[in-house]
Length: 418
Image (cartoon, rainbow, N blue to C red; front, side):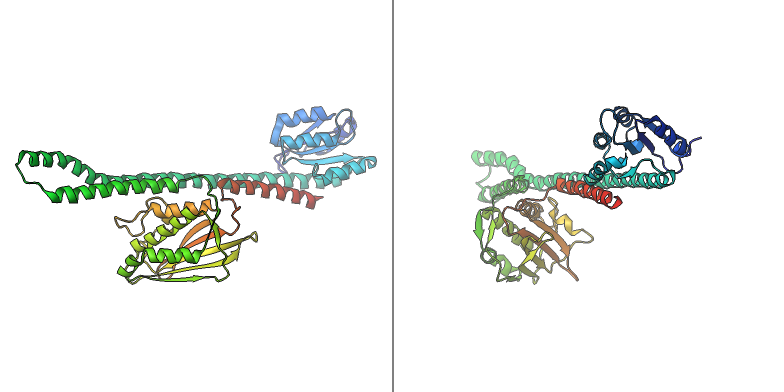
């Protein structure tokens, strides 16, 4: 009866000496599922047949046909997690050392091997293989979970997009349709002399309809701009202080009407920023429009910027926009960047504005984050690498980094085990 309590995984031993194979089966056959082969080609076929069920490969180095090192190299391509041990004579010592150093094998043992020593080695090897399999499973589950979360966010975003379009376009088109429905009747009444000409209708209602058409065009234009997928060229040099002064002047009337105070504090050592001038200025216009729309009279806005270094040592500018406005209920700040999410719930609040700001930072190789302030208010953090060649972050980078980390972990574990 085979006892599989020690490990659920199989062992493959490859050696051209039939006595060594027989001896191995006699010693370990009652504790593990053991496969044997007298040459590398037969051993490779067994690995193909059983796949990841085989957790440990022990192979002699010198055999007719392909060597043990060659077998391990091919086996690694079939199952990178497979623990590989080279069984060598003292004359093959250098080949064994080279195999370990190049990562082809977990370790090596000398012939003739001692059963007691080999028992410990096998248990250690299969425990290690089980740990690798478990780690890979957990890592895959985590990656799948993150992928599902990203997909769910995209689906949620599409739902918000559809709901927002429906709301904004329906309200605007109601005004346009009312004008179209009433215009022929009004025109016929005035031509027939039934009613005198009504200037208020043609001026006021027509202007309202025209205004709503322009609103729809603006909405769609901003949405198209926000969904722009190509990286922008950062060829324009601009002064952040200059842009903010321009924005304060542009919105001075609205700021005065609501008695909103704007304080600006920029690091004097901040160099001119290399940006896409049009999109960068538009982003600040949208931010000021957002603040004007949802802040209450007497609220304050504080804008600051300083030079920092990220985790990689890369120089960047951190720009902060902090306000003292109220935040709606239990809504999460990250919602601010969803299309058509509106912080103030006012009819003239364009949720897509902040989505456009988020995308602009992304396409500049930077990031945009939002968080609550205590006791009230919102903080918008914009991080922009000073180097224009910085690439935007991609979702695939996360999974690529996971894979790289996993490979380094395996290499480190192999080195420690050696």
